Length: 464
Image (cartoon, rainbow, N blue to C red; front, top):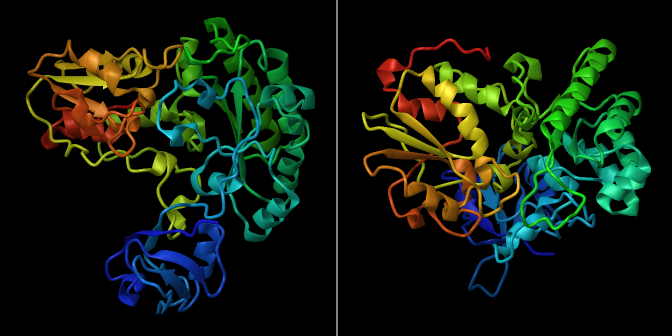
């Protein structure tokens, strides 16, 4: 078990007053060695917790009493969320995107987790195939909720085949146990055409309504397929197949609303783009609880872009914001240190985005009244296949697109394609070879970058 290391100390916090420093190694709290940041939070939440730390360069460990009232945050951030070992995934899903990554990327990108703790903390999806009775006891006793579960199919044989794991046929029993004990769970079905669509999808949705009706939501999303896949059975959806998935989801929404009073199941935005069908209104997403899974993301962006002062109705999945000490990971990791101040000026603007963004943005930007804003949909040759989202853009493809952008233009780039200023291909913003303004990936940030503050009056938004 690796002890967590302090990476940040809040000024004037109880930890700062007690003398805890960056790079201190946390060995125990109140004599207990925590196995993850959840237990760390529980142990440090009480009055005057006692930390045992090891400071670099010192031979003896230190015992530090942190004076504070119960419930007051200690004021630390630590180096990892799991201190023992991240529970890795032992499934071999043919649609898993990690198997579709090109060789030679950062080692961390190839890590597949299937850890319920990361599901609780960050909203990562877990299949429950490595879930145990001890895990169930902890989740229920500590109310580690919400959790996010990849379902894909409810038929045992179909699920086992999709996961390429015999435990896929039986592991959904844990989903039933957790739901019956009141744990809030959001599900996901990744649909692979010709494999778990059609009758299999219909059976999955009907079974979820019949046997797992306590599920809060179910997001139905298409597989992402890069040119590095190598799986003969995996292929992109046709337009007709995408439309059929939407029809199935909308039928199920009617059943759920009739029986449960809520829609429960939602198709991702990508399905509507694939099927060339109009997106539902923002209010149709029931608060957009699966925003980070690409469900209702476009309508949320539209609302923010076209309505001054309005934020989306989204709630970050996972419990990260409430767990003192948890480091930012995944969607919560710091995207860039060079975020633009979003100050509009009179220069023409070019926005670099993915192919999907290039379809969505132009009609919205027309309504802002700026005719000098150009949207470039960057072809993703690095991953290839049907990869069209902005979050998977890399420097190599952006450099090629920038060759055709006039030097007189401001260039805007969404931060979602970065992690700590680094693209997935390992390059940084500086490697692009010309000034690029990085914006937070939100409609509100783009609005501020394009409109002077005197023009930030609300516009009529169809998504309202």
